[in-house]
Amino acid sequence: MRSRIAHTFFLFFYAIPFMLSLYINYSHASAAPMPQPTDEPVTVIEISDPTATPTTPTATPVSTPSPQPAPTPTVTPSPSPEQEQPAVLKDSLVTVKVFDRTDNRVIELTMHDYIIRCVAGEMPATFPMEALKAQAVAARTFTARHMTSSCSSNSKAHVCTYHGCCQAYVSPERMQKNWGSNYAERLEKITRAVEETDGLVMTYNGEPITVFYFSTSNGYTEACQDVFVKNLPYYTSVESPGEESAPNYYSYVKISNDEFISTVKNKLGITISGSIEQSIDLQRSAGGRVKYITICGTKIKGTQFRTALGLKSTDFRFTFYDDQILIEVYGYGHGVGMSQLGAKAMAEGGSVFSDILAHYYVNTNLCQIY
Ligand SMILES: [Zn+2]
Image (cartoon, rainbow, N blue to C red; front, side, top):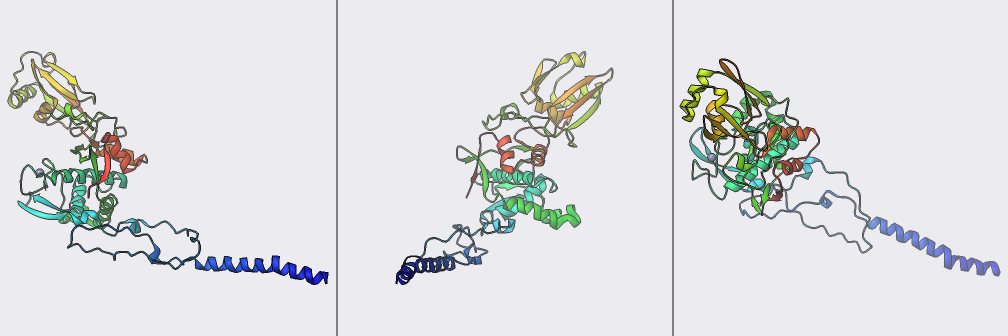
């Protein structure tokens, strides 16, 4: 009798609850949804352009009949770079009017295609991906700012294809010619740099910034007002190391005394009399470039002298010999904003594109423009 009571007690208080808990646990487990492709998170982007067709179907929330507590989150493998792309590229929904200077007509391109052609012209495709991405954001920011105005050489276009006016540009035909058998691989790399920064621009006070960038620094960049008339607060002189072995880091010009005197006379309107060495005085900027040069009492900007002598940058130094002058030059370009070779050096050192941009464009924000 005692054993039957004990058995009944055991059944009611231990065995049955235990079996019930097993059943409940099992039924919970089976309520967890099986991972299906449709359960993947999908970025849904609102498309303002009614003519645009999404490349993938719009996702609708999947309702899982799960009356039980929320299922344990399932760990899914990291998506591949292709899967990380948004369903619709925002750059592909914006039209840029480009004045093609080679055949003198305005063409319409998506921002996506224009930025690819611009990056292909501005930076070698062999540069590290993060440098290419920084270049893509800089090019998009330049373009975004011009979308509210126009190219100064054609009021019907936002930008033109001349780097001296707007930004460099390479047509697909020219890319094929330039890259030969590397065409597909390099185009894919640049396209990835553009798509992985889709819609991103640099802003200051909520507006896209005025973008400057250049080839190679002398170790420092320049404050904007030391080169151009404008003073833009996000262009201060910053260090730009790692470019010493770049092809354009160092260059020189040898010029005879007579030729120097005639060039200065013809291109700058300054007459040198007496010792050339004694008649020249240099005033340098924080970035080490020549801000002003005074020749025989006439003060001109370093940029004017650079143009007149055809020098690669305004960081030039003179060595005077008996009958000739050696002008040594460091860096290539105006020195304001991102150094493209500096971006390469930073990327090779492990910096990502946002680090590179934050370094050269001080106190700016990275924002989605659309
Ligand atoms: Zn232009």
